[in-house]
Length: 251
Length: 367
Image 1 (tube, rainbow over the protein chains, first blue to last red):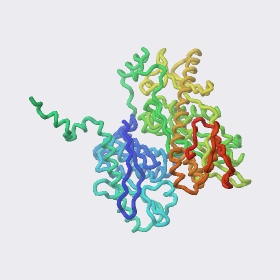
Image 2: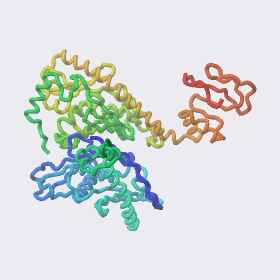
Image 3: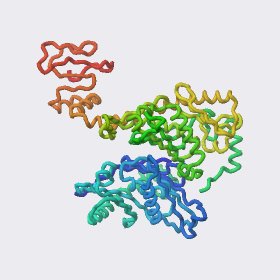
Image 4: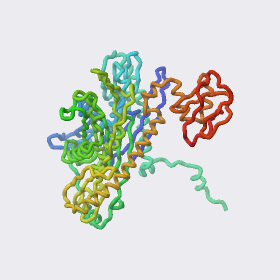
């Protein structure tokens, strides 16, 4: 099943208007694994595939909870320590957000492929991970979404930066928020910045991540439009024609 | 994670069906599944779907010292990764099958000299551009070999390498923003065709069910000049020479179709990029305002009049072989489109009006 959605983001009516690149997703893209999602933000594209819950070697299994195994592969070139960092980031997010005790003695395998890199790959990957986990039907405490922000030399903030903006930046922050109270689940930062600036970005990020969550909702509504069980659950929409047919024929 | 094998019932049913000459997805014995080719935003990023089998290919370059035995050639390196997300069969480590596919691609593409690697030489013996093709299997539904080969050839045909200059001892490799990258010179296009065998029956492009019950397969790489580039026998069957000949002919036919499809999709992608202005960003950004307006003029003739009226200072528009000056009086326009001027041209008008020899151009708007 392939559903591609193009989302034109609204600018937040703020003094520093926040520009986020158009985001699109394809859910349930792969035919073999349990859950898969591909998310594109601008020219950055990440594909995440999830197998889970599946069996795990006895040496690795945990009698009380599910074990998360993550693999991240970059677009080009040999593997690098950066991949290991990203794997760790995905694993930490999963361990926070997935209800691990629901599936003891099993493992969930997360495989992420960076198809093309054009900035804010970390948050694109986290978004794809959340969508893939939902498609795979793995129980989670809530949804989660990632945003990246860079601070440029002029002191300006650039949200959802491209690779060029990331190169020119002096500091880069990636926050992952959970969708309830929008608490921070994961932080990744590089560069030099002040504490005040970081807190400001953290607060503003809560607004920006709202765009991501409403996009998740749209993606899933489109995916479920073809699902018969879901359609039957919806309240019936009374249209003009339906009302007419309920009226008894005259004479 | 263990692979779930096909049940006895399923495999027996499939084998009997295949031996009768039917295929579970109602294809003919010589039919390929649908091939879809899409490109990413960067040059050399191609994704190919052969039915449900999905392969991603990325081409990249690095500057390195060449091997001493090939001092004036760039190297071509293939890396095939069968991702665990594609199937529970693959656990991410290098398996026999991934080695088979990598070796097949090397033999088909590198050893038959598809890419002119001498163009990649910067300074002989010192610096060359090494090409690296990273192929990732994202989804497995049978016939990985063909999908990987189509993806690799498409990505290499799509890729553009960085431009470089050698000034004595100084080497400058330009980024894509400074100078437009240059396409590789692809000398021929070999495409593999995998043919499975079940009893007496031929199954071209076997899907994953057919692969699990077939006796064996052969992969034959041919190019559009009807030359055989590589034959790989996958084991399990012995073939008569007549059968090998027949398979080579099938492969040749399929190569014509598939390479035609690759060319069409490359042209479509280039047209999309031209429209968006992303095909030659460095060249476009270095144009002056005059030249940018000229490009718009040639591409959008219907809006030309309004645009030039808005830009009063633009008196001339030039693009390639079209040079037009706007003058007040023109007597006639003869057959080839050359305007005959009546009186003495004014001091500003120094060139006659010429026309490119396209048949669509009937009259110049504005006259």
